[in-house]
Image (cartoon, rainbow, N blue to C red):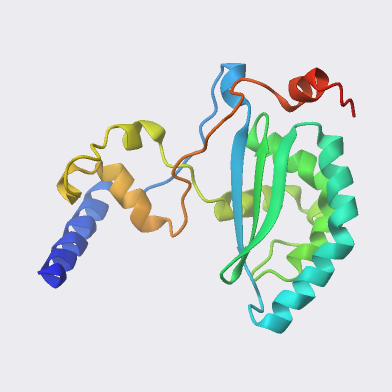
Length: 207
């Protein structure tokens, strides 16, 4: 029965894909400033050498860049949190920032570009290096490797009490899940509408 379901699901998705064409994901940007606070980035970078030795060399390279990366993120003054994580055979950088995606990546290049070059040398199919010389190419590379945030309105329309049924799944959401191997499903905000600068000011941390 499961085999038949998989075959029918595959056929249905193939039919939808032919009808709808390629599904693209555009990172939303709102004219409301408060909607552009605490935006998440989920950068997933497959490793050139995922062996234990390759990962150990990556850890050494990252350790030598941590100080510069930390100082650079401080200089942007828009990053709430950022962390590097090894997940399977990929290096992931998860961050929460304020503002526009393109502006954030350009700030990232200006403040951390040199340190990030060393990290990218361990990544499969990296962007042109050094990133400071190819900023537009780096922005597009990050955009392509950033796991999309699934549209919340599509998720909110699902009824978790009913059995899983592909026919009840929004068509665009189903095609996006097929096209994207990684996706952000949900992000929680403990203090919505607050910028990095506001949080640090309230905590009297300064810069």
